[in-house]
Image (cartoon, rainbow, N blue to C red; front, side, top):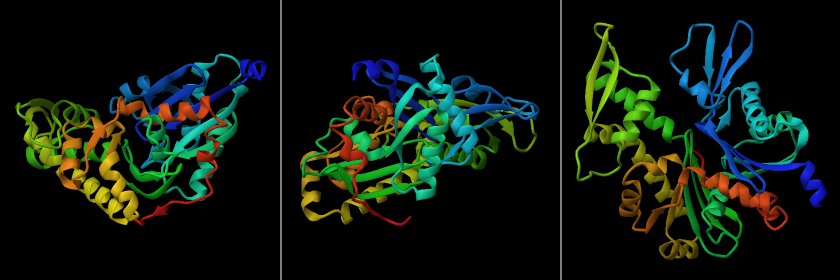
Length: 347
């Protein structure tokens, strides 16, 4: 088996709406870059993928497109999604791209069979010989070292870029789950719309994300923060700079955060009573980039009356879970081939 492992590699791929992470068996997370591609429309040439492509966002001439191939956790541009995976896998191994034996990919809970097939096909075309899919909340729970194989509840909230995945996990599967199309990208849109309405200023997504990171919070904080935003004045069309307070950023994000909390409460209400009782002991675990929003765990705990914490290194939590699946594939195989479908709540 060791000889086979030396020729073939197993990878875990967290192909996210905002960022993609690749875990190589025995090596850890080697790729953690934006899921962005820059394409020259005249020559159909891929100019950049990942960090370099994101730097071009909003700064390119008409013949260069900066594409995000996933929207709301679903592949919207198949060829570009395939190219992202292919380029990232090539960076890990300079040898033949077909040297990847198994690829384990994380997907949202609510994907249709057609959407799942598109993910599988993209990974196969990128160089994986065999593709396995696992739900993101299950991978996140595994990455957070929660007791998901035991008959007890683990409530995981994965706030990513395009979707928020909420699931009650027990006995290696999701008992109740919900995928909400409100996450990091929606937070950025909220800030862009607030600045447009309040300051009559047009800003881009990178600027909105900067404001979210610097001054964003879910609850009032002791210190006051102001962030400088530069954009185009909607009245004059000229450049202008404004100062946005942390209270204004919080007001911009309030509606989206409220919808996430309402969905968490809804999932708890639909869970079996015994598992709800377990939650009081186990608590709620937040992961994903959205979990880095200051004070969001305090707000969730206050609104649900359940102890809430952010997992260690929430950005790589799903990738670490995929890493455990890749490193110990046979012992965790039932997580991938679990025949039981979770109770999905219609959006």
